Length: 177
Image 1 (cartoon, rainbow, N blue to C red):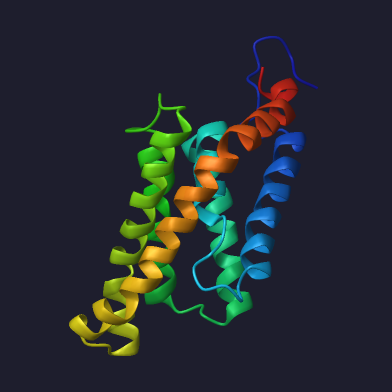
Image 2: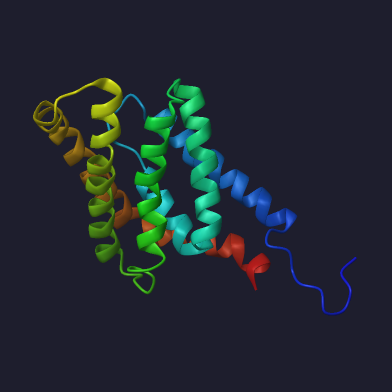
C-alpha cells in the first residue's frame, strides 16, 4: 500500500501491460509486412510511442522490440544489433527534443522520412563491418530501399499518425493523468 508522501512508481502494472502490447504490435506488423522490402509502419509506431509515452518508455519498447526482432531473425550480432539500436534511438531522441511540440502530420511525415534516411545511413557502418561490403557498392544497392522506407514512413505518418495518436492517447488517458 502506498502511504502518504510515497511516489507513484515509474511504471504501473497497467502501463507495463500497455507497453508490452505496443511492443507486440511493433514487432508483429514488421514481421507481417516483411515480404515487402522496407514497407512497414515501424517508424510511424516508434514516433507515435515517443510522442505519447516520452523518451524513457519508448526507449524501453524499442529495446525489447529490437531484442525480439534480432532473436527471431537470427541477427543477434553485437555489432549489428548495437548499430540498429543506435539507429532506432534517433527516433525517440529527436521526437522528444527537436519535434517535441510538433503535432502537424505533414511536418511529422517529413521527420519520418528523415528518420528513415538516418536509420539507413547509420546502418552503413555495421553493415560494412559485418558483411565486408564496400561503401560505394552498399550505397548504390541500398538507395532504392532507403527511398522505399522513406516513402512508406512519410505516407504512413501522413495518413495514420493523427487517428492513431488520438486512439493511443485515449487508451493512455486514464492512467497517465
